[in-house]
Structures are given as C-alpha cells and as structure tokens.
Length: 189
Image 1 (cartoon, rainbow, N blue to C red):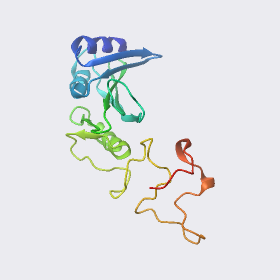
Image 2 (cartoon, rainbow, N blue to C red):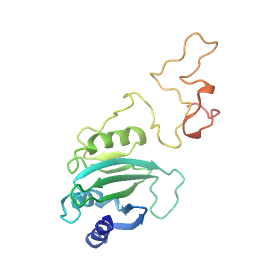
Image 3 (cartoon, helix red, strand yellow):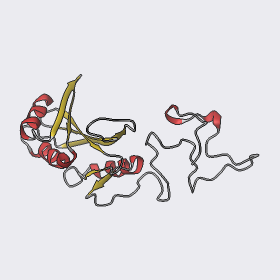
Image 4 (tube, one colour):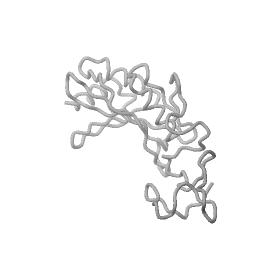
C-alpha cells in the first residue's frame, strides 16, 4: 500500500524526489533538502497518503561518502497512516559544512524531541525549531557523540576522573569495552 504513497510523491514532487525504493515492506523516498518540509506536510495532508502518525526521526553519519549529492548526514523521517495502514520513510541529506534541514515540529509535534536528540548526537540543525538545544548531553559537552569520527576516549569537561587510582583514568576502564567497535588506542582530544 505504501508503494502508492511513493507513486504519489513522485507524481506530485517530480523535481524533488531523487530516488525511491521498496524492499521487504520498507518503502523509502530520498528527497531534496529544500523540499523536505513540503513533502512531510503533503504526506500528512494528502487524503491518499494520510500519514497522520509520526514514528521516528534521526540521522545516519556517512563521513566517507563521496558522490554528486555530497551530504555526510542522512536525515530520515518515518510516518504511518492509522487509517490506510501504510508506512513510509523519507530521507534527505545534510552536508558536513552546513548540517541543517527544516524543522518539522509544526507538521508533526512528536518531532520536537527527536530533532533535539538528532541535533545533540549528530550536530544536525533543524531550522525553525522552537527550542533547539541539547536534550541528552549537558550544555558544556563538546562535540557530537554519534558522529563516526568522535573519539571514544575523549574526556569531557564535567566527567570526573576516577578516584583512588594510580593515575587519572577516564570514565571507562580498558576492560569495560569500547562502544561501536572502536579501538581503545584512539587518541584523546
């Protein structure tokens, strides 16, 4: 059923839909960033799409991506229609130099916290967001921890060193593992 949504998007926004794909029930449209908000509004308001339920919004980091679109960050929105029973994902890209896309808070209220989390973890700014500030990390936190080039051993300003040790150890010991298959020998910043 959501293939119909992809068809409607392609017909209505032929200039903005870059590509579509359908695999194993996952129907995806990649769109231009300048039409991201228009397409989200269309998905909600069009009677045939009727995607009235916000499911998720986040980003993926591709630091080594080299193609004609550029775009290190791929921001995605998943919405669902409670009446038509279909789900669709739209994706757009944001560049490393200027990682920003329009905010969808006025279309789907639930994107408020998801956009703040995406900003906090990846550094993607949502233009027009009513309160874009950190939501998981504290304000003094430096960097964006879900970026693939973020050093796993980086010491943060408010993370205290462990007491009663021979030397200063960061918040994790070497036998406590490193997240995301990162090597414990990475340089600290």
